[in-house]
Image 1 (spheres, one colour):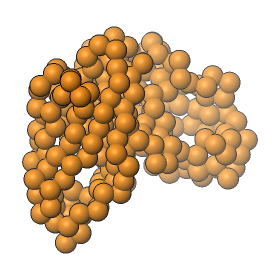
Image 2 (spheres, rainbow over the protein chains, first blue to last red):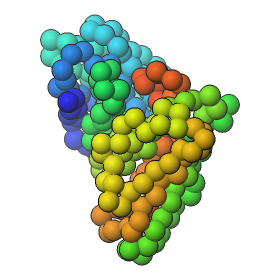
Image 3 (tube, rainbow over the protein chains, first blue to last red):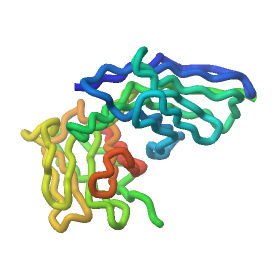
Length: 112
Length: 114
């Protein structure tokens, strides 16, 4: 089955800093890849996704590119804001099993 | 459009007591999921329904957990009896039929077992 590995947190940044959160996956076939965000006290929200190799997902200034050769889907943002403070989850969907597999999450803390 | 609704948001019970969680999916979403999220971990799928049929319950501990979705809309997840290790957040999600890559999550129910 699929598995997803994320960098451990917390990631602590100052406002306007550059963000990278690493994510790698193992899977049979070519899964769809996702980043979800969880704000305090709220459910998970889909941030972006990519369904095939070299696809770039983007939303709210965040980007991630599906890299088949490195089995990675790293999340990036050029200039973080305090409001980006949340837990970010990388996930993979094996369409054969219709099962979404999540990483352990990375907490991002952005200070003014 | 309303999102996925879950209740209660928080529940504290003593071990060996029963507990139930309720989920109302987004209108028109035929697929419903229950996930378990332990502290510091990502969600793990417990069960997936297509309409009223449980099509993937391989991760559901059936000795104490049960779920139902009788009319293909609302769903209930039950634990009986609860154990200390069941303390976690229970998330419900829904999607349109076949749209497994567009899952919408509810806020979750945080269960504390004392």
